[in-house]
Amino acid sequence: MELTRKGEYAIRGIVYLAKQPVGKVVLVSDVADATGVSQTFLAKIFQSFAKLGLVNSFRGTGGGFLLGRPAAKITLRQVVEAVEGPIMPNRCLSGEGMCTREAECMVHPIWRKIQGEVSSILDSVTLEDLAKEKK
Amino acid sequence: MELTRKGEYAIRGIVYLAKQPVGKVVLVSDVADATGVSQTFLAKIFQSFAKLGLVNSFRGTGGGFLLGRPAAKITLRQVVEAVEGPIMPNRCLSGEGMCTREAECMVHPIWRKIQGEVSSILDSVTLEDLAKEKK
DNA sequence: GTAAAAAAGATAAAAAAGGTCTTTAAGGGA
DNA sequence: TCCCTTAAAGACCTTTTTTATCTTTTTTAC
Image 1 (tube, rainbow over the protein chains, first blue to last red):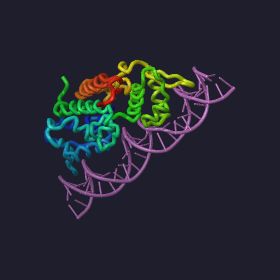
Image 2: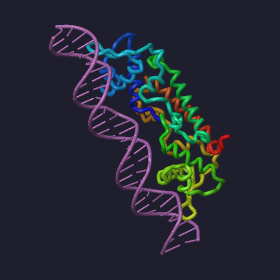
Image 3: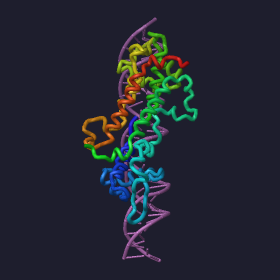
Image 4: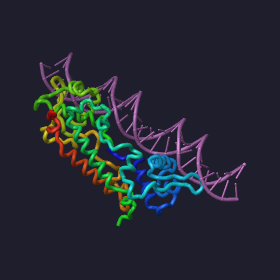
């Protein structure tokens, strides 16, 4: 029931991107320095983002990363799920007939409810919100 | 963001206890057989319960376990936290001055909200609820 | 005293977390 | 064309956590 470091770093990294002027391309190394995360590890995280289109990347001189779409169109849930996988408080919610007890299981609906609540909270926050300075 | 097997087994085991007639003492081995969990592993889990008073135990011949208080007075949260520790979606919520970014951190309040929601859902369910047969 | 049962602690295999390193591919500029 | 820069991809590694098992000790009833 805990976010891993990967998830933490992912958020820090992409929020840093969201704070840049629109269209500015930044190096992983810069993001790593600014957020205090190892460059190679952060690079892996950004690769996951790139596959999902959360960020765009450019190789070579002058390359780097920027957001794949406006910060207002990227939710915290998308960021977290990109590196941690689906919000899934209990294995049996993954379906695939794994939970043979589902029929009698009274606990099942509780996890489903938690899954729904957590997902909806994470869905309600965008990178635009997170990029604002706290006042 | 996932319940471990220990948490799953804990719930299965204590719900089985809650389904027994009030006052009936049952062996770990019986609970283990009924729930499909290894006996020694379940014994460890029940030891955690016993330390917190969620169950009472008796050693020796005729010994075993029963609920430490009425099923209606034991919440799902207490059961989960007994084996998994506090509901804590993000390390920085643990306080202890760990989160040096708290002042500027816009993400912090989100985790706090999730923590609150999850806790309150788990608090709202008792073993009495879970021991009912699904209809 | 002996058998039954939980308590406690040591040990260990397997999986996940948390990284690093090396090689490859792509792009820009001299 | 040849470097240099930078991300992509994948192999590799270490540490921690999970998921147990096994043994010994303590407690209790008979």
